[in-house]
Image (cartoon, rainbow, N blue to C red):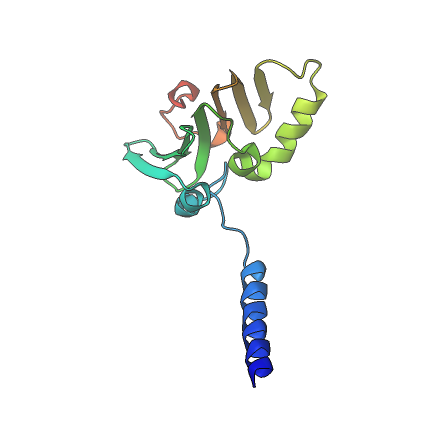
Length: 156
């Protein structure tokens, strides 16, 4: 009887494990994605969330335990048109840039100088990133998606 009970428990555990592994990773509010997934970013990053609503756009600021702040800029239509970051650690750009990350990575790899600030202006994607240990800043945006009346300088 004891062996049967152990097998049942093992089977239940295996089913739970398979179910947990089968669940997709949480969606993120990456550049060019929709606003509704910001809470998933908050959970995934274990960050605090502060939302600032303005007339031309909304900013969701996520602050992670390391002190890095990530701001996701959302147009009135609900599209994340820009992301910005600053703090002691570099955020996961694959997560922040989403579908745009591969274009970014290819452009950085093709640069003559791989060290130093990054200033990329590609069709449909602009990335400015600089920093050194314990002091990173940057922003990425889709120029065509910036709402009317908003300048690239407003993204900080």
